Length: 508
Image 1: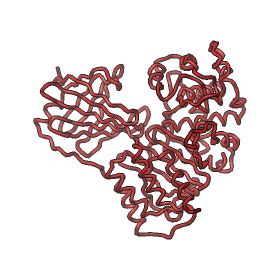
Image 2: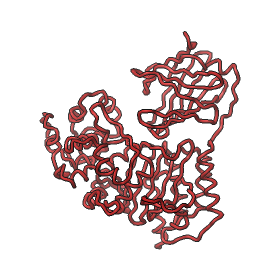
Image 3: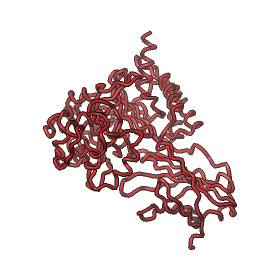
Image 4: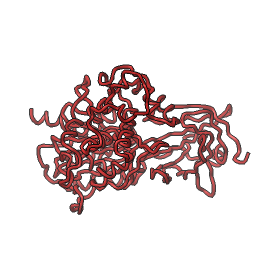
């Protein structure tokens, strides 16, 4: 009975909310000087190399859009893998995992006396805002942390709110004008605007931007040096998301929490705040809950979670961390991967060494990092290319605000030029067939991978994989006797658009 119970806990350890996890293995190496983590074989920490190897076949056959996976137990790196075309050393947008980091920054600001407590009223930070709504007068920092602000804001209308928020010159004023539908502290509604206000509060309380405050009191101590965090025109970083970190650096934050807020014997954040952050403030029908920016499991592990299957899982029972970055998985894929993980993990014992299985796992890791999962099914000819290449494609109104596109063929190379409304045209290198070509965004450091291939004689598809920025767009160009059309699909935002386009010669 104990063994069955332990396996069930383990499954949740590695698979929170059907978390999508895929694995490979780095070679064993000596301890890294000056670092908290060292490397280990799977067997030394209770994992079966043979069991983990099964995941690679599943990933390949089902074309899972996984970018990286990192597993650490007892401060030992058990698995650290990257799936092509994602690459080691890249930062990755951790999406709403940022909310958990913002929660920690609020805790640090309270520990250091910049903020009195989470019960402090939000109005005290925004004296210029003059509203008479009862909700505004009683709204506290805790209400923002726990997603109980009472704003008419949630999954159903957040995109439409963002559409109006981004052009605004005064984000706090805009948010405070969102109607209250309940009194603060009464009802859970997942609203990212709450966490923008927390970022603004950090700035107003400390006179440091959220990023600079994080560097001074959190990132620098943990050795987190590679950071990008999007901000608005006023210089306030999005407390809700768009923080980009390397996977190992997200794991450092998890280890800090496992160690009670201390790093190399230095107290970074109080144990009291960690206790509050991982306590269930809201209990959901399935037995899980939400704390201060963290999703809480009913088995008492807790998680930072973001769009597209970005995840930091923290399990104090098994002293383990799991970091996943991805471009989005469906529920069936997540469930199957979770089953494989649960079957490969034996938390109550060290497994005998299995050199054959371990070496096979290393080979699978190398293949996953270098090979392309699929290949084109149609080989084009010159007539096919003449229908589309070196033409100007004019778009109607669309969600990506693309005005025009050009697929340029020159001296055997392809490139994609995109012109978005109000922006300069950008030209991206375009791989042909199975091969990606890469584009590094100079401002953010995000790496994009692009490739194009013919699906039929009249249909050309471009994969615009934003990789470290999560989104993978499939842009389909179809040419027909009665006109041409473009379809755009992206899973994490549920984008699925089809519209007619006009095609003209490049110099017309």
